[in-house]
Length: 77
Image (cartoon, rainbow, N blue to C red; front, side):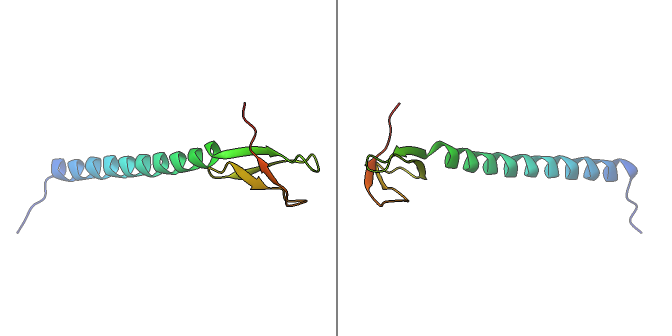
């Protein structure tokens, strides 16, 4: 008959908890990095024709206005 010691079960419990914490840490770090990249690649445009300010995601230099479809260059600060 196999006997499992309490110290072995305690070690398995601690390693399982550490693995779960590491997994959650990696998951949330990856998720936050993706969300930060989405926020970072938003660009602001101002329509020359109708004067509306709007934003688009991605790395575009020119984007059409949602109201009048005029192609505008992005604003640079």
